[in-house]
Length: 302
Length: 282
Image (tube, rainbow over all chains, first blue to last red; front, side, top):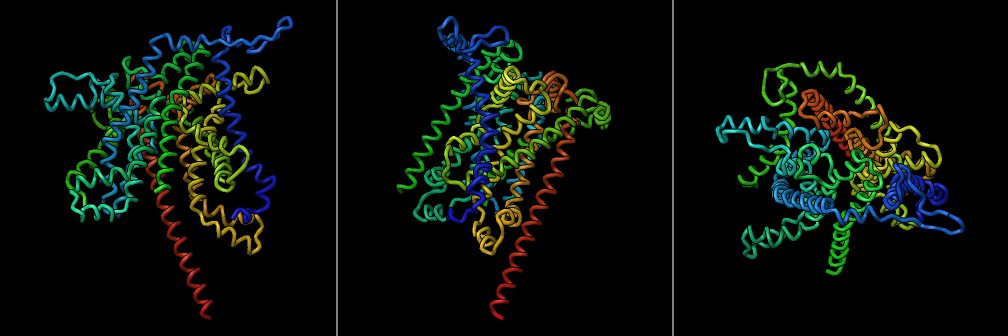
């Protein structure tokens, strides 16, 4: 098949096709990260950074400063914020799955003629500004917001309940923002499922509930994993949602980085936080990759 | 086929997705300054927007950046998608794939911080990127959006029938002609989707832009974010309503256009097939 690739795509053309985007991303994505890595271990004088390597009186010295990282591990604030970020992100994933899985399931089992419209209705909010959709919850959950007013009017409550700037308001915002990322991959998986398998299970005497747990759910694991990664990874580093809807109890690692940079103007500390954040995100990704390669191996073995 | 429970679940789900947007729109027509109490219908906040130069300037800046980002992203994205799909083995392919995927999972605070520090380092070492503003934000957005564009275009290339290109080549088309006359029309829909997707991502971005903007350069999301942080603000609701209106019209026309294209292509294919049948019979 490769012989059919046009000649011009083999020589200079090929080099350009691969080289241009590669060069762009190396220059403006990975090189900047190396700068961050370097700044996170360099001695700072104000916002000027000392050279890592210096040549004084015939001796070459390599100056690496790990104080930032040491500070990250000794100051409980950072560790707490890390754990909190992972905790909120995991909770978000679990809630999105609990709401999104049945949602995707019922979508996939709707009449085929409705499905394109149902999918479009899930993806439509994507196209409107995420910032504005998060802001919308401020008006709903505020002390004199729509929800409180409604509950007061219905006499469910006597005084406004404090919802804004709590873990509750932040989680609502997170679930709201990330729910479509869970629904769509799970739906894509469920809609392709061979319904004959379910019929077979029913013919063999399985109850619908048993069939659901023993056939449908195991078959949809790839969709669940994909959706969970799409929710988990970005919500660890979330900045806008905790900043707009959260409070002091929901301070997340993305906000730490932002504050170190913009408020404390401590560039090397912000860099150290960035490097450790990447490490933090690589862990679930590595688990995911491991799982995927194992899954692929099992699939081909069967 | 769905039970009542299933329908109820779907209804609640959609309500959850749309009620915030609906209230946002409703309160943009509120006469009262209170964002949460209804004080009668009014277009007051839309008048405010027209005279709000900070919002207008922000919008113009954002629009410029988004147009440039979407265009650059589909150029780089198409190249990257071709590299991934057509060249199964080349030096550094794994690294290349990592570069396409990484910006999708790295939090924006990190992308923004690292690019800013990179620009500062460039300024000190080579004296370039001395001014931060539209260009630096554009580079930041493009480095993220290229990857989204590559993913969208790649999925189209993977399902494309390569034999059509081969047929054109066998019939004597030059490579560039093949690309312009066969490949491009086949993938143009994915290019449009990628362009629209990257356009919206860029138009909506607040974190990367906040790191990369210079003094006096404010994109619309930066202005909105600053106001939203301070509290509720009816002009923000009005902006939201306008953007929802534009998006709904855009998505609706877009899907109608795509449906028409799809139909036309099906008709053309059927016509070509019929002609072929007649010729073989004759």
